[in-house]
Length: 79
Image 1 (cartoon, one colour):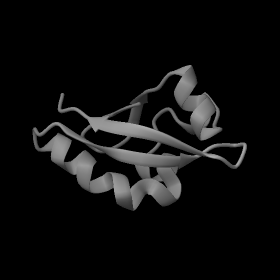
Image 2: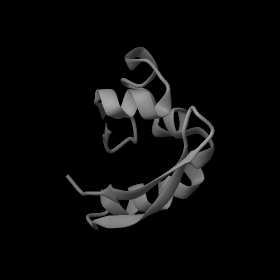
Image 3: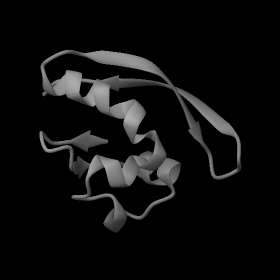
Image 4: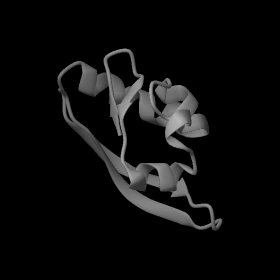
């Protein structure tokens, strides 16, 4: 998932669509807050750090459509 300086989605891939359970139309151009839903408050400080030029990473549990929790290491890279 790539977001611009205004935190709107500008690129995503199939894996992102499947993970989020959303269609491309519900991701492209949308604010990160709309895409991330309840996870947004957790993601925002890291996204802001990346916008400030810092690379960040942190563990993230994401609910899967099966009800399981998927474990990731999320990375935010400045661009």
